[in-house]
Image (cartoon, rainbow, N blue to C red; front, side, top):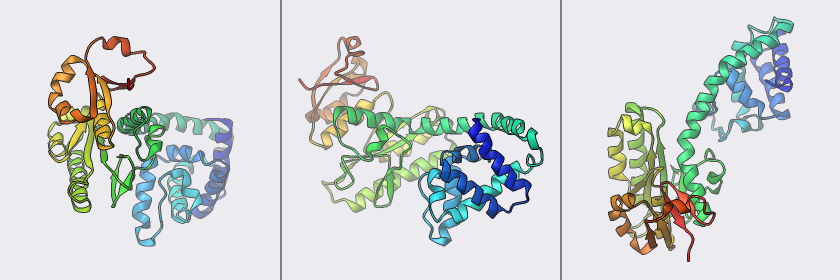
Length: 324
């Protein structure tokens, strides 16, 4: 921890040492966050909380209070939700730090020990979350590079940004926009065995999205429902694939991100040129025929020369070539 972080925690410890209530500790935390809102991540780490855990707990606690919970814990101290978030965080953090409050000069060493003990777990949580959102981030980068509009545009820089909402259903990417969606993408990437809960959750989400599209959009104007699915979880539990593959209109993986570009191009009146490994072109022959009108041409030879070409865009195992 930096000297600044240690000093901030020292002030927190002082409130606890003097017997401050949860409300007084919450006020100290709020002042700390007003000075530097990034300290929220340190408080969450030491309290054994993740960024999503505190938001989920607060959403449950605020349901009866009609209080809106922000999409990021960095905003909790700026809104009326702090009346609930403050005491919640103070109770969790105070329960841990109260044992260090009476140590005086020795508290700094103990805080560093706590930091060392909690940091690896916090990082594992963050890594799993970012791995799960990596797929939509990669697709967003490819779409931006080839000039196909999508929402939310911030996905290309921050895959963890809030999703798009259409009639109460969340989508990771919507192409080209929310006003006239043509492709709605649900990313389902699992970094561990998905188990029964994950399997059921995927099935529920894809079914909910499909039913909304059928109910809200007339025949002929319905956007394509695309699943971006991959990960070790599906390898260890392949039954989790069944509901998604039979409900979604199309799907792609990390390896076949180029399929997402083809579908997006077809649905937005664009055409693209592809370069694919010969075996991939054969394996996806039916898909390529289905979207033939959106494909200018398919190159299957000398792909090694494209690896470092600044004019082509890598999309999984394939490349999107610049227009002639």
